Length: 533
Image (cartoon, rainbow, N blue to C red; front, side):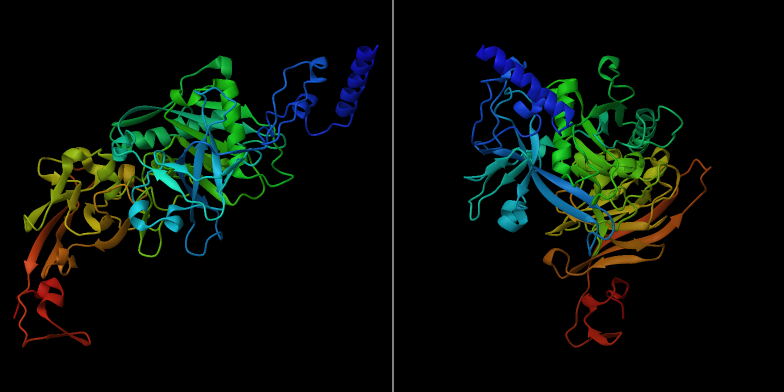
């Protein structure tokens, strides 16, 4: 009698919930494994749940971080007006596995609260050894909030970091074939604006889009890197490299953090594609659903597989190439005072257009290695003079022996110097600044993928000089003798003839030059006056 009474009561209770259309279904209310699983306090509902079907798990909203998590550096492109200095923002995340899941399941991505950064927490020497996607993080007492997917770091905690000794050997491959999966998202009250077919066209050229992610990486690499769509799997909805997933979130009525949305997408992919879905793809892009206001345009995890785009920006090839570039370990390309300012490069400012023809700057191209047979490495302290021809990357196929796409000058303690000709033709016709000029770009010594700075644009007859090169009294002079353009139809390439010379300007203590309003010694004068009367 008691069992029948309890059964009828539960039937009425379930009808009551459905009648008033509460946020969660009865199954999720009793076992909220999809919404609020994980807590330090366990609440068992096994007493009456078997009557309505299913097997209930414990619900625990918070746990402690027991093992180190893998750090991910998120490069976030902010919406206009979000930053006074530039539109870039960096946040660090951590990959964490659910203890209740199988050991081989894919991890979730947690934010860190308060915002943690190695720059703020550690000295500069240690910071340089941190590698996104490899370095692990641990701090005693860290709490995992599984509602908000956040690692809560206690005040005054001592952070433990560990980076594998062979970190740089794990650089992502920049040649060969890669599989890309693009994810269209349907939320409870909104969805990605573009259709699955349109997204496939803008990413892989499956329709009428001649300029797309696949075509641009193939062109810029001259076929060395091919980003192909994920293979079709009709039974789970993958077609032409795109899949649609559904998430149980309302995004228009209230603000939901991008970390929560991202992890709901990850969970939906696990359910649809399998718990080890990441192993099948080299890059996974999320096209976030449309909302009225979102503080970011796009973001990417450096050295990881994930990128994300704000709705229709998912269709802009400039944004696609930029964010995938971060996956390939590339940092930004800028000018002095503006981290994104080098618009000669894809890793500078992106544009919301779907047909942008622009490749990468000299340091990024050196790292990618696509023109390695046309690289020239100079060490002026060993070989003080050099002369040769520079050809732009857009005319790489017209080069002959002793032509160079990039000249890299080694020797300064902080930066390497990269010299290139920025031809504004063909696959690079939409390059921004320094069109058809010789560009001087700096990047961190020994790391061509690092943040780079364009410092000079040279026309024929102009020079760029570095006084007291590598702590010596000598001056390094990079001079452009001529820039010749035989025309796009000519079998000969446009080229710049340059010279690099390490010069000793002999000073005389009794003689000074008046240059402008200052009196200078010979070694402090422009290099064209070196050793002249």
